[in-house]
Image (cartoon, rainbow, N blue to C red):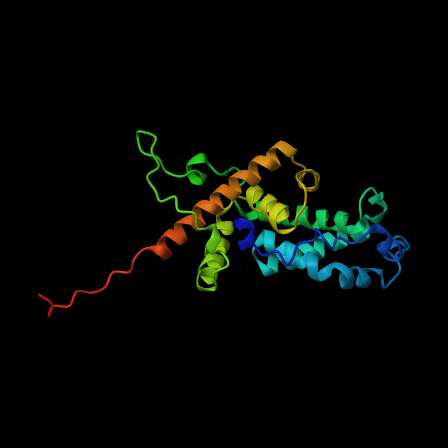
Length: 226
């Protein structure tokens, strides 16, 4: 059990992605610009789209704006949907891209994860200077889950926009590298590299938390003991 066990997977769309044929009626209503079509779209996909936007932006207000903008774009540009993928997948890619652009709008565009941030520390002789205990088996331990979730959320918040977005789409939403690349307008190579570095960064942060939790607690000295 590794990092993926700590990530929130209830928003995963891997096993529950809607098939295009389930949306034929909705698609027809949108293309005909029926008055209730937009409401049906929100009812069908609003909750999951909001969770996705929140996971990427980390901000409920921004997530609401992202979903509103993305859904409005879908309604206005429904003619651009060619049916090459499931309608739900196409919509989620629109939400993902909108959330990514929102995230880039208020975070530094030039920052990226350096190797120093993601790799363990070594001394001048190339020897690892930190603890390397395998803590992955403890992610299901109720006594540490709260601390892990807090640390995970904090670590994700520190990720640059690209790294954060691709990590959420890959490890939470279960999209393939190709789907992520198409959604964000990136190359597959860049997506793979950003996902890898983001995972290394999170592992390093969580390992530090686990090391801190496992450290022995100092007890005050009793002056009566000689």
